[in-house]
Image (tube, rainbow, N blue to C red; front, side):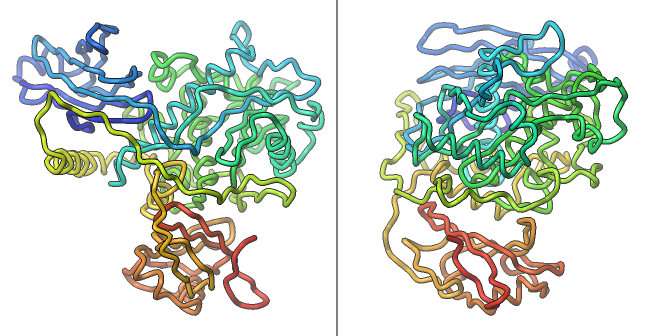
Length: 525
């Protein structure tokens, strides 16, 4: 009998504070399965810097486990103990060196006290909101890193600031309630760019505290459209450098990591007569936590230049965040909710107005991330890389049939992994000219994707050689719905190109759109 860690090599090095550990017990006897196969636990000892940090029970189901661990800077030794059988995992945590960061903002209207809506007797204070939002940001770091690793792009994530900034808006509560989503996005974005925490290398996730569900007749809504009509200040919109969200679901977000999995599995029913139900028709506290946090991940994807995809996080796969972070075995929401669409109405993500800059294109990362030295473990870099890749391939094979919607399509994963906020890459400055869109690039292109109206995926190409050889006619024909076979992204449905992006090896992003009058691709200003 042995304990096997399925998703992390030993040792592992990360630059984000929370890791997800997935494992199981193998080679057990029939007696062990009879006694512990249905539901049992193992013991986790967490040591850092030579002292025991904590000891806790980890719940298992079917002799499998999945847990979230908060790391301390430096070496973390995680020792698992099941019936006297032990195994240890070494995880090194170092602070990220990426200058491009994601900032969290809590927006308070000029006439509001800052408290968000929630059940009676729950802590809805500004301080509680900051705790919930910060933990949510850290969880998204973990999900991005783990899901990119699932797709073969390494366990890397965006750099998140450890504070939640307070923006005292000039807008009144009523103005926030009556403004349309796009205008509210623009107004909040403009205020952020005029505030003291403006920074040209930041993207922002902002949360509007005044979202309010108003149901005076205490009816039980029969559809989400009806729920939205009774919700003031509801928004979930991302693009450029800003994702803006309402806070009607914030009360379901925990303040401490130890409560995350319990909350995701919480089957308590939401009283839709008094509180907004944004749970993808599940009607539970756990479902609302999963869907609302997942929607932040989806809109963050738009901020990282991702369009809508046929499957995965950039479709409706974000609803399945509970499946991804726990041992929950329910049917994935994303496979049975075709009536639900991302971004509420599948519209193009908004672009910022000309008078403030939330789309950033300056600077190239010049620093290389530092890696800790594992002097006590004799393993060559090539062997470690081989074992890491082997573990990833095997784990992905084992989990591919689960149906969990938290994954990235290949073009989304490629574009995401190359972002300056995700990866530090020194630009080679080997300037090239991309003939198909008549644009100079600072270095070789990595991925080119074209999209139809609504930012919906049409086709993509990868690799400098293939992309540089493209002509504008090829893009227009492929974007017009021709079946192009197996090359690139293989457009297999009719569609008309409306927009697209190119990302270079160093993370520079060029946005383009289709000019119907000129019948040509132009660079978006």
